[in-house]
Image 1 (cartoon, rainbow, N blue to C red):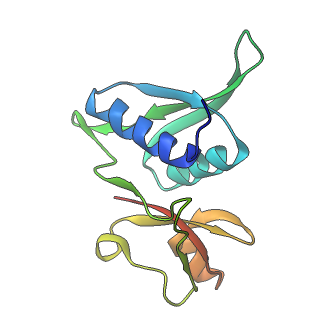
Image 2: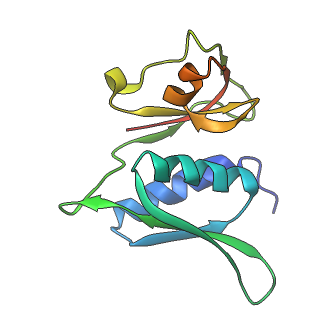
Length: 132
């Protein structure tokens, strides 16, 4: 079975794992998913991530989830740009998520970064998801 939206699948797996208070979530890896995990780590939404190879030579991404007093640090994570409808934004019109308390993950020409970094570098791009 082919998957049409692997980033959407990653987001749903993170949501589901946090609802069940799992310590980590494991999913198929790609460079793009690793970059998203890197942004989540630098912004403090997850503890860490690692890329592992299993017995059948498949590469998987293991994300260690972060909790604060038993509650997940990520209260909401939503996909914005979908394969059927891509959402692009310029640097000036990047949305402020939850009045600046959350972040938007943006895919720019210089790589995947948070909306704060994209504004600093004056880069626009595709808004992948919002996290807060």
